[in-house]
Image (cartoon, rainbow, N blue to C red; front, side):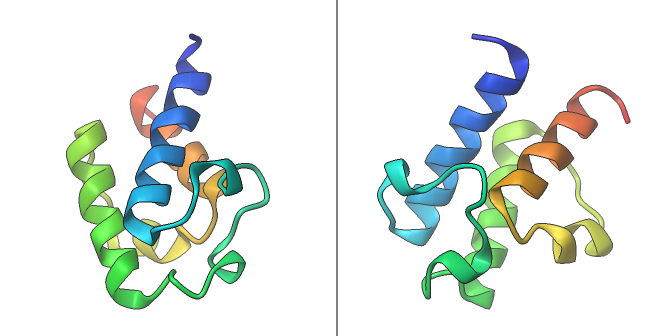
Length: 83
């Protein structure tokens, strides 16, 4: 599994778990508007899980921008590549 595919799979599972949606519904194009379960509390839980899972520290600005599967994958990949 490539690095990006691994990140996508792990992010998909975290989103599905935290938001209580089927993993099959999570992927490119999935945003906070895709489910009513993407509440502010669940967003904070998601951030905590992402930081723990990937060993990240996200700034407040980055946290505010994590509003879609695509943005989350992009942010995690950028952190993992040292960017």
